[in-house]
Image 1 (cartoon, rainbow, N blue to C red):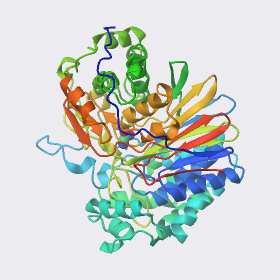
Image 2 (image 1 turned 180 degrees about the vertical axis):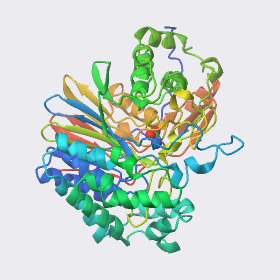
Image 3 (image 1 turned 30 degrees about the horizontal axis):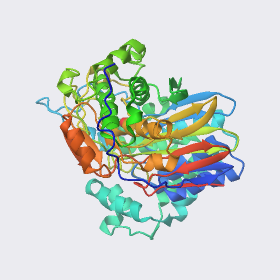
Length: 554
Ligand code: GLY
């Protein structure tokens, strides 16, 4: 490793006070929407474990946070049970059987909007199957008891928060094109106001069936039939057979170490866990942390690690059931050392010198993460999504839930930009039954064999860097969990070769980074982390002030 010079270590990010997390002894839930958080706490109080609460929160968010909470999307659940077992449930959307590599290209070979908007944008939804599998494998309470709070929220209604009402109005830009979405979420143009009671009768009936009949209703029963008919009528690809064949997959979590902490994280088809482990590996052998949180030197080292990982991401990651992901090579200590040695302590490395492939993107917060812990020591992290805000903007007729536009997480045209501006390669090309590559990375940090923290975030490609930074804030800079979540964030993803920094970094820090050769772009909020830390018998919950979320325990 080259000499690390600490000359310009002092300029720091703005926050200097300590924010306090929510503390409780018996259970903790952190989610992006207060009603859903409350549902989780009530399930814990009723004798449910963390998995029960996580299932109920996921279903509740499908009602109260419709931009990302979902029945019509998919995601990942990471579980670490008190007895030491771990599990990673992949209930991400799969490409329908009729999907094909060039399905989003027009007659001239040009990419169309169809991968992001409308019926053809949806992969086969996995959320109901995934949550049901979690309940069956690890839960204590009956399934119906976990679904009922969501069904009640939908059919009886709840008071819309400012952020949710505002978000629906914003989502209207696309939803107004689809009569069912316009009717349900935009009240035919008379937008819902904050504080108004929002009733979703169709969704309530769908959830009632799911409560009574289980996931079978969604994948083979009345919900499946109505969804497949709606798809057929509007040119969508998802058939009854696709729904019936959908399986959630249990995978081995990815594990690694950093400064004595054990990391349990997301394996492919997430790119996130590989990223977290590779970047921490690069950083562990440097003295970046001595420069201090928010210093130009620390930002420089972390950014260089990001740059290298995102270059790898563009080429080497995809669905492991379809392509051979070179996991061992990407995490090989010799390779990690090579990356570390290539970092110049003084200067930004131009991305053009890092890799030849092209990967370009921008963040979106339209996914959601929640974290749950119970008194027994069971810990659950869930990140799930419709992909874009309000997904494909299509509400399934008569069913009340929005459908995902996750097909855009594939490379709709390998070599050309998708919705996030992502230019990806053949590893992530569309094939029937395949899972699109994800950045979602629910993560659990362990210390001395016990949970230390659980965390995750939405934010497209920024998810990986947000989780990295919050983990570093706690481990390297000993921040409490709320400070770690609040701390200003930054993002680099190789290409475009720019360092995006939240407001909160001082002009001095920006100046030092600019002198090192960075093109700094100021951004608003990056991510919405939901984290819990375990501290001397206390569960400390931190919702992200960037979101309308809450932490609550008992
Ligand atoms: N749809 C966002 C992600 O999975 O990364």
